[in-house]
View 1 (cartoon, helix red, strand yellow):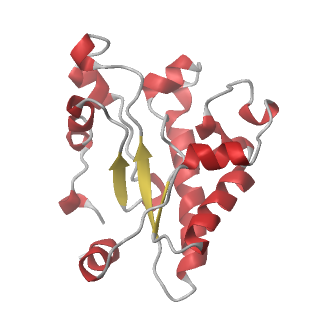
View 2 (cartoon, rainbow, N blue to C red):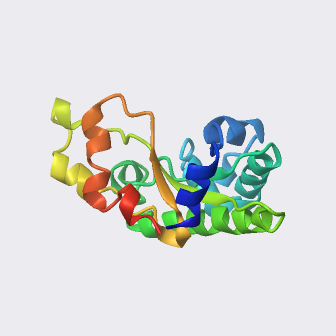
Length: 175
């Protein structure tokens, strides 16, 4: 059994909070977004110090799990920023960054974890914006960089959440 599943059985495991809000509190500049204003996920490459600081702050207040800064890092959303070819690079950078902070805090006597953050995308299969198969295929693996779980949230339509397990995520497949 993985350390994450053991922790969940032993105690309440606390996840981090609002990444986007915390990013904005740090006042990133337009240049930090490399011309992709509003695409917070790019900060894992352009301003990793901001993202590391946020992860560390969540661990400082007692969180057990931080989510990767990848809320919008699917081909669907990244295509809107002309970055669809960088899905793997952004997700990998975010996972490695979060994992390095988690490892630093784990050395303080308590194991810390990383979950791959998956936002809802900007398309709805129920409104014909995209097919269910296309949405599932556009969901990258958040297991890059040793994420121990996937966290899907802000999905107003259950069909969006349905796509996630179709990409190989399930509690039994977590390392």
